[in-house]
Image (cartoon, rainbow, N blue to C red; front, side, top):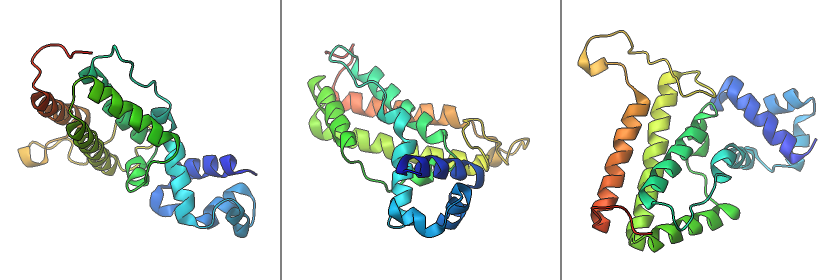
Length: 202
């Protein structure tokens, strides 16, 4: 049993029972070991959850980085969509990720993305705030989507409990359309700050 095995089994347990039911006791039973054995790899549950959050982000963390010739607006949209897709791959993915801090190669990737935006004509402060706003907006959207889905592990299609009603206040939510509309507003706001009306200069 190594660290990667523990994290992999912990993520599978997350998909099965949800974040609130994940415990070191349950994980140890799943692995067929005594609970204290887990502390060889993780000092406490918080450290385990941090490792789980990092591993769950692998699809987004290994996505291609922007190239100098890329249109910054197209890249901004796809980067945020990639983040959303990755959060949705795991049950309670947004809750697991919320509050986690980047480190190591994640910081290098963030620096590369920021440098790309600045080189494309986006003021550094605006680039920082737009990336932060897009990230928090995405986490919030996925939190709501996964709360509505209930058991929606590994899928973007949740069952909205309000489906089938006619009252506008409880109309079914198209989470993807709502996300895209909000993301477009974030991007439009950033583009207005940059002052561009035509294709991005790369």
